[in-house]
Image (cartoon, rainbow, N blue to C red):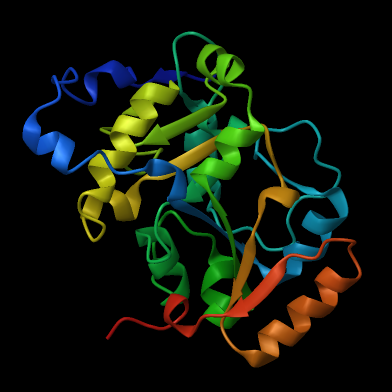
Length: 249
């Protein structure tokens, strides 16, 4: 039996039409979304394979030679993301995109680091501790600069969501203009429930050269990750940032 494909609302409905500039808006120009950081969490045991391939691959990619050693998502979550179509203009599902969060305290990552029995997460996540993971950091500007603008508009190469991409009510911004509007709206309240669930999705694969920083929990993790990176040919900075890995009291 064929799988049911679910298409979500178009991005055009995410925000109201652009208003004319006013004196107030000129004094307070729109937030520059290019400096928005994006975050991808993975288990440290996956890092060597990522570096070897030189890229992060979407779940649905045909380029996989070896699946992740530790998979964060549950089977149910992966299946759901494989059936949700991003746009009615093509047949690409959410699983055709590499997912990033917009906050280092995203709701999924908090569940991982606190070992919560979250249905979105695999059983393996409850057997690991926060220091077993690394956070790969890039920026919206890095992604935009790496994509041809016309191609991005035509093929939804980059998609911004206003919530968990697998959630029923989440809507997708599939054009550059719509995505920028959603990012500005989300950044207006950086502690909102929406931005903690929202995702930045990059089609097919994400070149590791666009990763500017690898965040780790402690000195021991930094030394281990530096050793992995040193043998890869990359020179990506590795930094200890405990707040990203601490439990919330």
